[in-house]
Image (cartoon, rainbow, N blue to C red; front, side):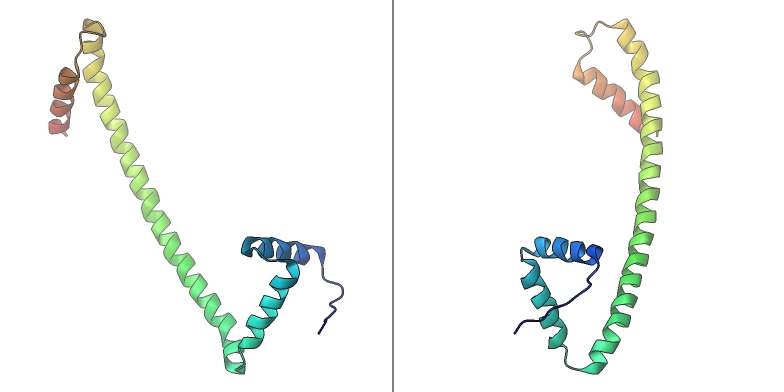
Length: 122
């Protein structure tokens, strides 16, 4: 059976096409899927309650993600502060050593011993 739908705004058609492409379907197949999924919910209660439930779940999830993002942002800030302090200590500690020694004379073991000393001061 064919159904003709008139006066669909261009922005809605673009959204349908984008969603259909994401799912690997033609526009027609995607619209049939939407109608099928909607018709599969035969209970009026489910149809009426679902948008409210989904909206509440999405809001809860967004709030949880926002709290998590704040925590991540704080952790990044603290880590960057610590890295800046370490970089300052390294600069103070290594700059004189590099000025005294030629590049080839400063060995990895020397740098590691200096870094170990700085780390134990923290």
